[in-house]
Image 1 (cartoon, rainbow, N blue to C red):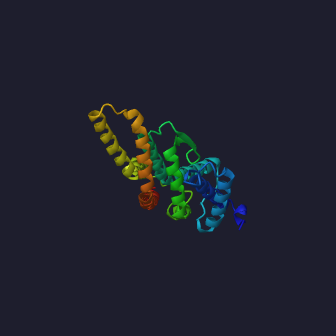
Image 2: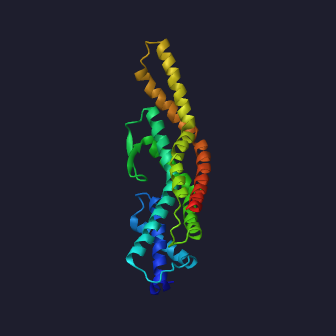
Image 3: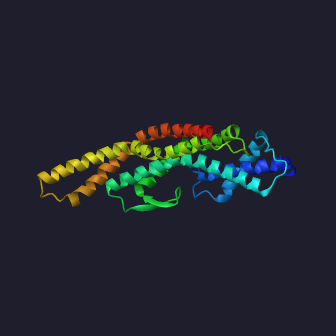
Length: 257
């Protein structure tokens, strides 16, 4: 099992494999959370690397030098981070959706710390993020991440530099999917609160005696939370479809690169 310690080419290959896996785990959902200790991620990367090393072709380096080693490590870090960020875009889209809903409901100043993104987000974003992590694990998303790691070694061997401009353009295109994801996730709550605000505006014009600043906020919060709770089944269905689509996009990114 530890024969790679006595072979220079195999050791460099193993190190490159571990670097790619560690880069993916540090940026992938759930694995990259601050609640998961860095040494746990590194230990997991080493274990997965020891499992994959015998199926990965050795890097054909005759005379290894520092420049070549740095180039190989840099390429694996960039590739691994790209794959991890692709799957993280979905979580970013849902958190952005929670920010929109929280602002509409009047929770724009109610922020909590999110360990997934290491930032302060609205309480609705935190709720959707927790629900999203539970759905992600229940759907086997963590296993999909490991599967994507194994497939990446079959598609893009370690030690080569097949970075194409199409792959970078494809990643930029995927950034726009964050906003599409946010609209899909928040559609029921967003439309309901928009209609409610229009109705309250009409009532305010027809009955000026009503103080909408006092009456409106409790109504918005009650309606928003009710619709959010009622749409959780829709949230699960949409998130499941988006999750499978995003991993298909990760596979497409690997083919482009």
